[in-house]
Image (cartoon, rainbow, N blue to C red; front, side, top):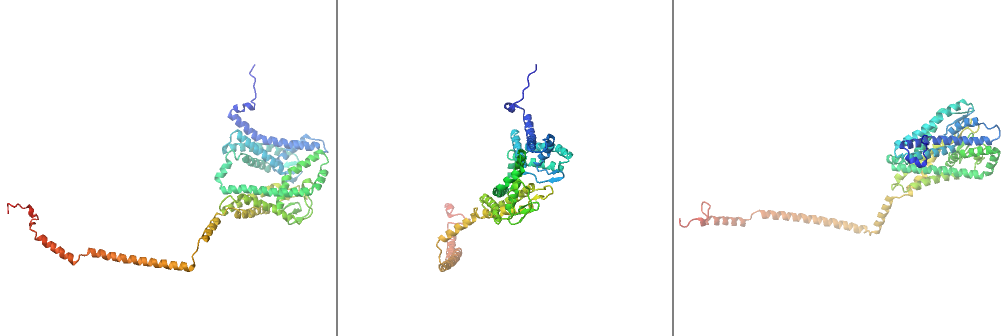
Length: 482
């Protein structure tokens, strides 16, 4: 008998070869979000159909609808009986993004992905798994006449969302964040962080406005829920519908509080304008008004508070006020770009009916978002931050004010006395220089007495008997020879 084979448990994972650990981590990261996401969509569809009244539960129908529903979580537009469905719930997209980012981070920690090359391998594996799962769903959805997906969007959107979320999950561990800090200006990075804060504050303002409208219309929401959900399956379906489209409603409310507003078919509203129309009868939209209220412009304080928060976060970012204004401008640009992306994802086509389309004016929303962040944020960052030059000038002015200042007449007299003293000093120096020059010339020039003395000295030296004609002294002459 052969030796019994055992499967490695978690206690023996560290003993496995590194190649097997790497392969297992990559496989888990690649297939985990795909499998978990698809099973979650399949389970929710099965529970909704099983609890609803009407036709008998059909497993084949649930399986056929689960694939396109899973792609809808990646913002892939659908077609139902030839009618476009472009406004897709952002709630499942957020859940999928969190799942992908977490799976990538766990895989990076298991294989020690501290370099960008290893992070690229993880991202490529996850994108490849999503592409492989997309192809059969697109082919199967084409064969059914009721539900179809757009092939190009089905390939691009899952890969794009997966790559972005996986990169975010790996940004700290593999050095992407450090590389951004190296290649980007520190002021730009600080502005991007403040822009993220500003965009979050704008969305928070929209959420507050939406919550206020829903609370004031709680009776209408309860009545709509009772009408649309007579049984358990319908109640579950309506609840999932409201939860899935809740982020969409928050984005639309943020567009309303920012000023440009939004539209649902023929109905459009903003803090200053209102055009009535029909809206879907779902509990999520119970707070939609029937007429304009005079207090709506007061909601513009919410995005103004977002700009003030950005300015407060940057008021100590630099000593130079101009540098702080640059950071505020970067934050405003980031908030404007984020508003456009979220507005495009939150809206879309809705079956070519009276509710089509659901949209935000993206151009006006981007301008409004930039203005609400840049103007209040710039004012706060400029006036509430440190001003080193002004402080130094104030100190110098105070010191000069404390010193005693002479009068104008005394000052003039002192200046005249100083000029006079300088002139006299220069004149005295000139006279001394002339006298010194004359003395030097007199010392160098011989006088008459000196000439006479030199003559007498010469005579006396010639009459000296001790000096002979040959230049020798008399003392050297032998007295015997004389």
